[in-house]
Image 1 (cartoon, rainbow, N blue to C red):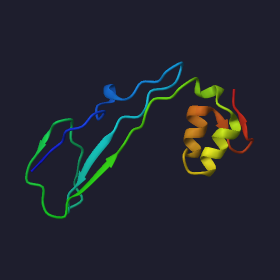
Image 2 (cartoon, one colour):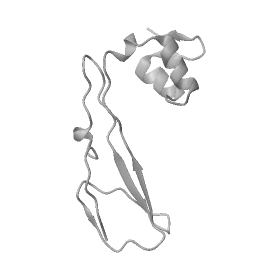
Image 3 (tube, one colour):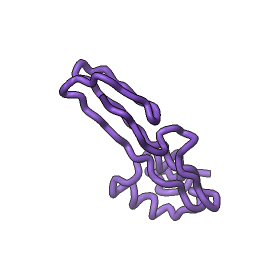
Image 4 (cartoon, one colour):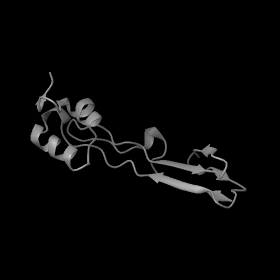
Length: 106
């Protein structure tokens, strides 16, 4: 049996942003049963009879942002993509940075 206790699993419990920053992502938990079934528990949900070989995965959502993401320096965003901190999609969608032109899109 497993009982899940944690914060930030529900989207409304994610960290808030400051000074125009975006909210953080929610935490996420899932169990993968040996047969491939995925169970994504809710906060404080009781999960019984987990078979041997079940895998628990946890993603920490992280904190909220500080400041308007469109005001972040393009070079810093590009460096974060190079270092694997941001995906190319996050650079485009969150920071409006085009990786091909190395410029901010309007």
